[in-house]
Length: 149
Image (cartoon, rainbow, N blue to C red; front, side):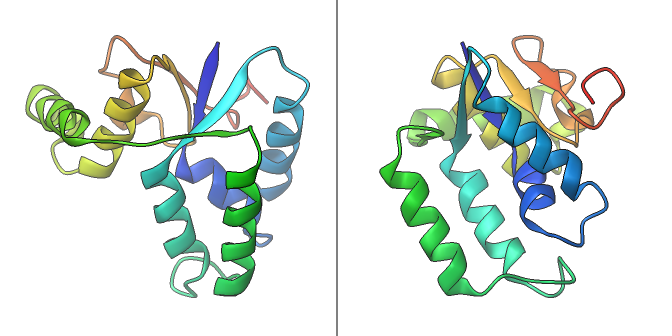
């Protein structure tokens, strides 16, 4: 079984000033002991890299060289798996945007959902559950809610 980790979890885990930092780190460390495999969409990695290096998005931004080193190390490992998109996935994302009002102004979230589903991933782990709730094929887990904490 695969679970896709969203940008929001990556940001919370790497931004040491984020109010949910400790819980995000604990969750991601716990993933290694679980029987399921974690994965992340390429778009989520790109978004994370852009946001974590910006002082507009976090109080203690990382240096681009640190982010590059982290991405290089991640891509050399087998986990998390990196899921890549293509034209068919983009078309599926646009269909999700047209179908679900919660995704109308959230194309990146629709692209994450479409990428995960196209790769057979039915569970998305995110702190921003609302945009994904309408997609019946997707189970959404928020590790910061009491049930998953």
